[in-house]
Length: 322
Image 1 (cartoon, rainbow, N blue to C red):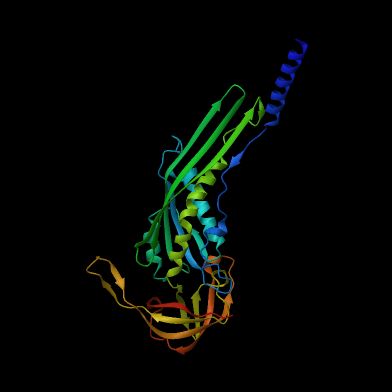
Image 2 (cartoon, rainbow, N blue to C red):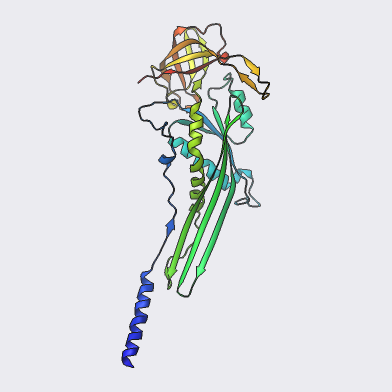
């Protein structure tokens, strides 16, 4: 009987030791690094590009999650998270100047700013986004000797890209992502799962990862352009400077805007292709503490712009200095 008792004691002690050896088990889905979401074309190290100006008009939360009774539309944590993550992703590319706009009605205002009559900076693109689906699910499994808890957050985002010059939506896309945290304990040994707020960021980030690459590609298709601010006494100033990527020696083409006509098929006003009237070289950059108000001084090297209103002209890239 003693031998049987000893054997039972050994089996029980081995089982307890095995239970104690099973400690914390925590897994979180690894999300792709930001570099993987950047267009290969934009990451060419030998190519210098001039930065497009992009404004995020709004990124709203269209779900019921995070919208408490006492929260107004300006204190939407989920929408704010999505806006911050998208802005950070685009800024990481070093190919865009990012501006934030509060409301969708800014699209109309940005279109007016396109005339460049009373301002130094206007956006090339407006991004309008929303979190269309967002949910958190927690499941637990309690056994005789073990306990586990799994937290899953899923998110779906929709983005629309608006060309400020035309007011048209030129790109629309949807992306979904999820993040998971799994915690377990055996025989009371292990971690006890608590509410993991970081999963919200991870799920939204994963969803934005699905759309950001195509967004970057579309915003890079349109040729860079800027505008003449003033031209008098042999001195010509244009919008943009160091922050936008302009260097001394860069050569730009001065284009006269084409005629605006109404497209009978769509009902939209469209601008016909312009014609080159001059070329200019950047002579100096005028620093400004506010990157939104940077300007450059240029010299005309061929052609002429006299007799043409600055608002009827725009500038495009011709040859960038090395």
